[in-house]
Image (cartoon, rainbow, N blue to C red; front, side, top):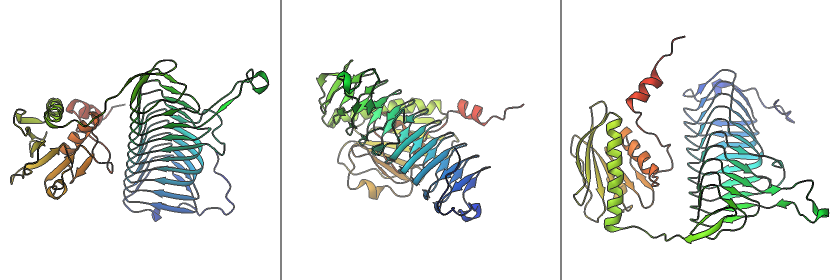
Length: 397
């Protein structure tokens, strides 16, 4: 694609106008009348950005060969746009803080908006016909995961609520027609928006057809085809998808909550050993389960305490880092998270303090058990030594 012709040609891109902490690859091209770039932004080789206005948040990275075009382009802080992502959005393309759009994603629509902590897996497509229409809009909430090789056919509006998750190969269709089945043959083409309400979970290879609504908290089984509306709080599946049973969603408290979290800590302790950490002590039987962990370098000791009651919070010893994992986001949790203390409030997904590498690894483990905490920073984990060694190895040619 060639850059468009502006009524008033935009000024030449001047790399020296960017913050000195930015990293700029080879052959980076930006065509815009207004450019605002935060600190520590990385532009890979052969990146092209075309927009009337560009706003890129701090610590965002744009991978090699990405081509981003929109009348208004906004990327929040800490976003990751991977290699060869292509965007063509006539009105707007906006992704909230710490969004991640993986390699090879292709977006073609009028307006695309996604909230914080958005994940769009490798090879995803917004397009597949009719997506340059006036109605071609995608609106996605916070903490949404759309896995690999998804199709969002946004000929009409697609709305996806907060905390929605999908398996790979999702297909959302908002239009469909065939020359042999038109109005004069008694068949009407399908053009209708699709809505997925908050907390819905769509399994592997689910297909949503034009006009459907998936209710809040509903789970749709793998390989299902949704041809009509599904109510809230149900498990549905099949071709066509039908309600299988009601879901009984209620808060888990007391001993069941403690037991579930102790199991997460047990699993995490095993992973820490695999990652080169030393688990010095593990007490899973006390009312407040505890782990004592030494980092891979052996330089820091961290105590992890599970809090399921209303007793006073633990305080760190002089020579340790403390991580508090609380079922509830207690009023005293945030004030306690100072210095070497990090605190997680699982019920509300709260993160207090600044976690170190071990704290981030626990945060990622909590995410893997559907308890994400903090949506202003990406999820990262400690690299196991075997993988780290191979990633760092120089390959002789």
